Image 1 (cartoon, rainbow, N blue to C red):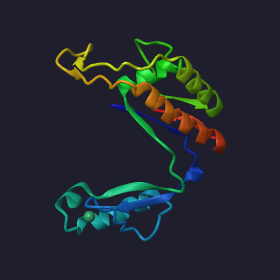
Image 2: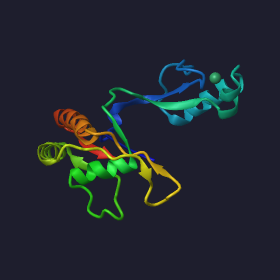
Image 3: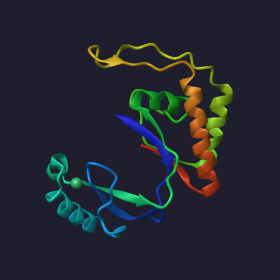
Length: 169
Ligand SMILES: [Zn+2]
C-alpha cells in the first residue's frame, strides 16, 4: 500500500477521458471524450478486436486526460507514517489516518518546520515487520526523510502559487 501527496483535485484539471490499448500509449478514442461511459464503450469496442491477447482479455484502459499534471510524492504506508509524524499530522500513532487535506500555506509551514528541526534521518535497516514477523520491512535509506520533505516543499509551494490545497491518500 502506498500514499500519494499531491494537489487537491479540481474538475477544471480534467479535460475528459481517453481510452488506450493495453499494449501502449496509443490513444484509440477520437480525441478526448467528455463522459467516462463513452470512453468505456470505445475501449471495449477497441479491445474486442485488438490483436493483443491481454488487451482483449482485460479490455484496454480508460484514463483521465489532465490539463495540468501536479507533482506527486508517492511513498509506502510505513514511510507516510514517518513523514506525517514529522509534519505533526499523526494524531494517533496506533491508528494513523493516512489520508488528509491541508491548506498549502499551513502545509508548507509544517514542512519548513520539520526540515528545520528534524534530526538528519539515519535511516532504518531492513527488519522483520512488527505486525507480521514473517514479512520484511525494507526500512529506509539515510537521508530519506529530508529528501521527501524537500519534495513535499516543492509540491506545497506549487499548490500555494496555484491556490490549491495539498492532499494525501
Ligand atoms: Zn488493444
